[in-house]
Each structure stands twice: as C-alpha cells, then as structure tokens.
Image (cartoon, rainbow, N blue to C red; front, side, top):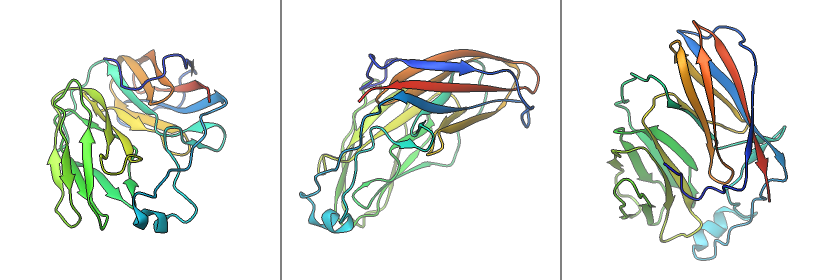
Length: 235
C-alpha cells in the first residue's frame, strides 16, 4: 500500500542501536524521529473566509505539514509494526477526532481497523468532514454546530487524508492500522512500542511529507531495542 501525498524524493536514514534495558511485559522498541537538512517551513493560513477564526488567532494560524521540535525532532511521525505476529484485540473505546478552534485538534490520528473513531464539532459554526479514502469507502458529511458526535470505522488498512470542504485550510490524516503496536511522535519526537513478544518484526515510520522507511528488528526475550529514524528534510 502506498500512502497518499508522500514525497518519494525525500529519503530517510535509520540507525539501530544495541539492545538496552529490558521492557515491561515482554520486549519493546523505543526510539525517536528526527531530521537533517532544512525542513519545510510552516506558513500562515488565510482565515478570512471565517471571521470568527480571524478573531481567535490574532497572530495567525500556521500549517502543520511539517512540525518540528527542539533538537531537530519531528512530530506526527507514525511508527508501527507493519509485519510480525499481532494477536491484540481491537479496542472497544473509540478514538476521538474533534473540530475545535478552526482546526482539527489531532493532525495525525492513528487507530485500528474495525475501531470506531468518534467525530465531534466543538466550534460554534458548521464543519464538513471529508476523509478521502481510496481503499476504503470515501464519504463526506456536514456537521453543524451543536450536533452530537457520530462514529465511523474502517475495514481496511489505509493512510487517509482528511479535509473540510468548508474551510480549505483544515487538513489531517486518518492512519488506519491492522496492528495494535503503533505510536505517533509528539514534540519530543520519541516513540515506544511496548509489550512485544519475542520475534522478528518490520518497523515502519511514516511522515506525510518525508515518506516512509522500514527496518527489520528481532526481539529476543524481554529485550528493548532502540531504533532512530532520521529523515532527510527538504524545504
């Protein structure tokens, strides 16, 4: 499967260190996502179509295609087990996706195949939720202010861009995964994939702008393996 809107020219570098301290309840894979080079700069968003949004952000609202942190860390990288044994059950608790303060509160939302995602609108005006799926069914739904949340689930693994047809600057991703072992990096760029039984796994890191990288990892016993993904960033 090829994720949408991936810049294939931007390659990644990966480093794997020796096994470190044992992980809880089995093995674990830990690490971080960083970048070298010059990352794409965030740009101010034109909010003039929605005067309420202009008032909310007197200093402007910025794009989120590339979000960096201290020490060249990279946010919104999805790290997951793309191959290897996985017997974890699908959570009965829904993932949450909210439209608030003129943007999606979660830019990259990862959840399981078959898991509900609860979609809400906390703004005092209407939004439109439009996940542009290609493998799964594409749908498009208006969500007026004050209406209750609704839920939806997907049958197939897919990286799905999401947009609002009313407010064109609102963009996000649904990352629908078969595995229960995944993480999305925050400002510190770190991730942990815990509770992994011994075995060989393919670990994949995905970023919406800088593409994907795979690495095969073997866990013996309760070892913890450190894997660092270093993306070559280009403006």
